Amino acid sequence: MNSNQITFNVLDIRRGTTVDGPGLRTSIYLAGCRHACPGCHNPDSWDFNAGSPMTLEEILRVVDDEDFDVTLSGGDPLMHPDTLPILIHAIKERGKNVWVYTGYTIEQIEADPKLWDAVKEADTIVDGPFMRDLRDPDLLFRGSSNQRIIDLHKRRLHTT
Ligand code: SF4
Image (cartoon, rainbow, N blue to C red; front, top):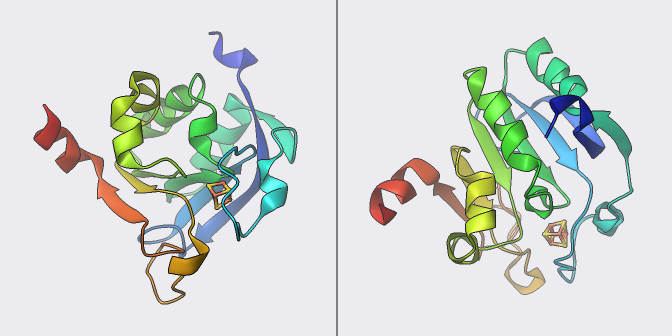
């Protein structure tokens, strides 16, 4: 795929946020989600056409503008398994740490080669659907207690 042709519908970009992972981060929210979690904080993000289209290069320019690590959220970034790995690879090439928020569990991801290939270059995922009954506002970087912060480097060591 020619990188000039790669676009993402971006709901929002926050520079220097502290709520989506450790340290100051550039958080990029990609439109589109089919998990339909009851109590989702932002059902408007489910629409794959929401937000504004940005090319890969435009997104990377924002990443390059800031001396921050990067979080990809949404929506669910893994709803874009063809293009997400290209974005993650380009951010990792810049020497940045990458977190990905997804409504899939790590078990679902590991069982689906396409999902695993899409996210495997990231450093950390926060996995699983938001569950209203398990909501806990005191949790660090997560909305509900079923969600896990998973170091993919350690995960790879255990699975290879
Ligand atoms: S995965 Fe996230 S964006 Fe998607 S429905 Fe669940 S809470 Fe909402």
